Length: 451
Image 1: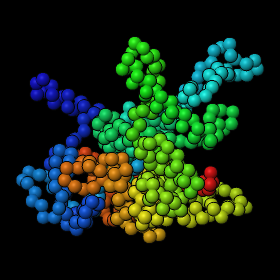
Image 2 (image 1 turned 135 degrees about the horizontal axis):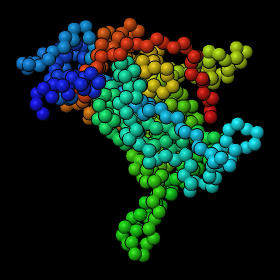
Image 3 (image 1 turned 135 degrees about the vertical axis):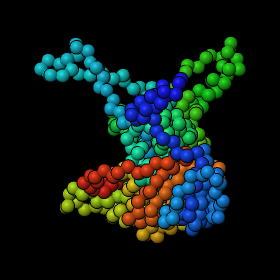
Image 4 (image 1 turned 180 degrees about the vertical axis):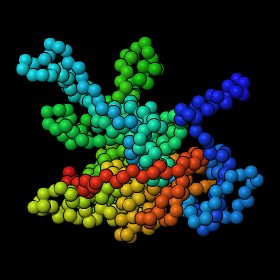
């Protein structure tokens, strides 16, 4: 390709928005306040980045000639923030309604009726089990929430599909990159599990039914594995097991995510999760202030939903909430304080919040109630990386880790603080202009305690 053609091609791509300027491969942030998380806070630190990694961090580091230098005076540098449970990066899809044949039209009605769905006989039909679905196959860099989250200081998310009882496998993704493949750090973060049901008349139609169904699936998976191994050893005398993608996906599970918000749910899931002989994490956890000793004893981490329960804005003014509900509203924001004091590993997520930046505001409320700022920062960074087995690459500012950084003007939890810039894999991003804040719809509905 001659120079004139190359220049024309570059101009065309730039005009089309397909060519982006890459950050310098070697740069330094000098003179900033650096929160390493894994070590001491450096009051006048330097962070040296090279080829998407942290090359060095410390005070008084010599900066090689030719390195692009960013003046960090007045800036705070944090490890890139991590949302420990989200759906970021997965496009929202609306399932298409099934087409009905013309003969199915009912006289007197203007629309056709959908064809009857196949009847679910039991666990052998694998209803609401989507264990073959992988978030790593679904993420797209164009998904609209990515820029919003990055502008709030998040560089990484653990993202999950969320349909059915066994929704599929999550992925740890960086919130940058030109393709979905470039975003994925770990395609096997864990299997997202729910216990929601559609009520009686469906299978499984109750909480007891869901838990029995999950147990049966694991029994089926164990038998399926033995049958496959037997057939591999002797395909002549042993029958060939029919391929079952739901059980295949179950056998690929290295970590389970189990829902638990109230004390009853937490205690139930601690017992239930232990049955599967697979590492598990509890998500929700707003009543974990009541169960810190049980969580500590079990050694189970918590992904904390920080949408603290409040009274609904449009709720009936004459409705009298129960004492348990009032207690949850009052105590839920102290859960991070209790978990940190007991040494229970916990991270946080933005699930249910209006915007990613609301995670910071929620943790600020917990800080006002006694949470140490260092513990809050850790929950947003290194603890999340440890829970998902990625602390060797993420979560702190150390030599050799990914150059994922969040840089702010002011303390992270100060109301007046702004995000100055973000680095993802060493590439610099600046926050997008903030959209107008939508009218508040009220706080989180207090969950029924004891369900």
